[in-house]
Length: 616
Image (tube, rainbow, N blue to C red; front, side):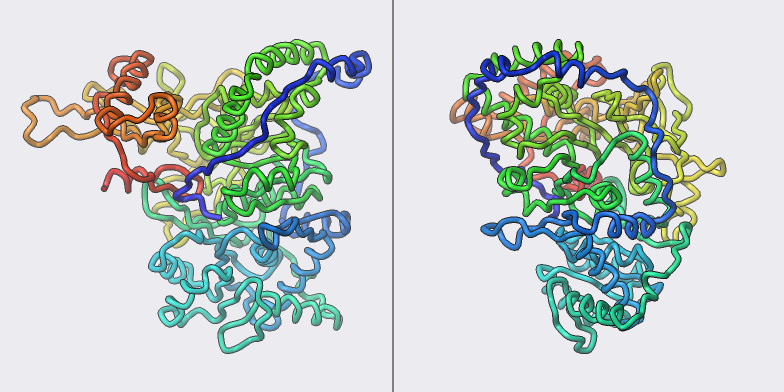
């Protein structure tokens, strides 16, 4: 599922009763105290993994957890989740890899994988990583001309696509004669010219394996060899091709194992698009290493019923979705007139937890049930999040983690340790990485520099751009501005490319102001930028005008203020902006308001494409 033009749907949660007093009387506090009171750790887990390739832990997991659930996917909305075991997944991957090499002769060639999240995507990507060639995960939301451009730029020899992309594939077939095969997921079509079904290849490969050919399984993976090509969607510039190897991905898994424990009984909920490095690495490869399962969300409109059916223990997501869940649950609590009870119980349970007695799961059971009942971890990354959301999640007993990185760091370079969370930060540098601030100012802020084994090999066919971002000392210039506190936690305050520089040299980071605007009930989304004065402006100075481009939350406005006209909406939001300005130093104050119709154009991780918005 794509999240480029994401509109968060209405989420329906059950009414809250919050009859917690009877539950509190049943709790054996003495027993809980003995169970929960442990010395808090300050250091990474000693049993962190040390993998060098993805294939290493893939083969380990299919042998160690053959009967464990691996992928859960709904055939359609009315049917229950269908479970594929590790044994079945392993056989399908080995079958497909064998066929791609022995039948289609795609060894060491580039293969595009494009489509919504589904079983065929997982099998295809793993087969590529385990020895076929170079995987090119591609955004399914790309218009046809951009897809054609990616095919040419990558020099792809095959395209594995979902049935929903069939029409787009038909449109480019004749224009890309260099593509040898078009492979359709969920199809058992036999080879007809360049067309073939993915299931047919899996079956052919399985038969080859049964005949005694284990050549694919025996392929040795060079950890340093170019194996994945991610095209960044780019919030500020055209897409670049990021070259990664097996070591980059394996080091992500090693990094997480030092900070967070994932168990075979865990279940991750997949809601983000798999073509993005964040989801395909941490949302897919990580649970595979741990013997955990992955439940596929059907789409945003089904997120609540899917959560309640799949009962995940962890969700990997982005701020907009976390904030929407938080908002909708709290609206239901208020409508149920249980907000005072919840706030009181947060205070009580926090005090008890401090004494080693954690009863949050019992007290807030109704909230958990709305999210499936088993949730213990939410990870947010890709953009800043309102701190109060993370603190509230921690208050009800959910471990809230944040990650930081870019496609260029495959993607994790920093992560919150679960044993010592720090809501509001982007986490600590992973144990293998060195992160520092370049030329910090008086506040300790500067560009974040990263040296890490997860760092890309470079930009595809672009040595000049690679040299611009990776110095001779091996540090990657992230383009992010931030600071690092005394405990090593990283705080990102903005993007260097988004910075607004005033005439007297002051730097204004739009993200800082946007976080404040997005807390305003009447504002759905915002983008702050420096607007050039009109050409006929009589003002002598040419100071940029700090401007907020805003999408109103019309539903909330009607709920709070009744029916209002467009002019009244403008005045209403401008009044709220004046209140926000009081929280800002004078040179950061918003001077102009623009009401935007429709949605902001976004990347797959829901970052606003500022350069496109500003060009409109």
